[in-house]
Image (spheres, rainbow, N blue to C red):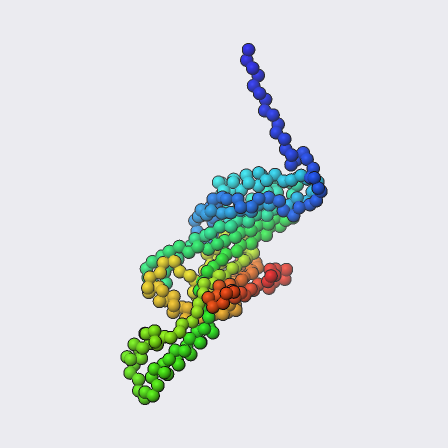
Length: 315
């Protein structure tokens, strides 16, 4: 006698069949720190794989609903990871997928991708190249059919203090006067040799690694993420981005660029703001420059926005 096979048993779905212990609406429910490999399409480059950490949420406006279907958010992310690249159009489709899978529960969706994006850069003078790393945060929000896309890029650079440069020059002048005091004529070769000594250059200005954080709102009619476009605009404005491969001639050129581009934090912020104002495809922008002081134990900071009505607020 053949036994009947066991019929599959329906598993309980507590989120759908139960009510909340305490009623109340929730702004966002979902997951954070989701680890995913993602192919990113940026600018006009071929897609590149990055290791991303993702936050995915929908709202819960129904006060008595027990909860959302978190696995549906993860499945949508996994499908995008396997079947498509991350650009503005796929970001929009992902948020629509979040909502369609929760059409009986939610009317808002949110996703945030955080990853490092590498760009190839040439050395300042030597015939070498290297990789530069740029932290990127891409955020999408869907609400009442309206899509909002925001991208932040962090760009490292060097800043040399104009005040300390002036003070260093004064000390060098005083050292020169002390060295050659009373001499009616000074031999040029002697001065040249003296300037190349530690006695000649008795002081140098202080400089520090600095970070420009740039946040922009993007139109969804531009498919590729404008990462390199933003980086290039900011680095050209500041003129002293940190370097990858550095030989002696590159280091000397970097020292020259720092000496010719002295800037307070206010100067740096104005340079970046002007550069972003020349990018009409950026619907709005917010920027913060951080000079990680080598003199003080605190940082110097300047913040600016595009200044449009209803746009980014400074803080």
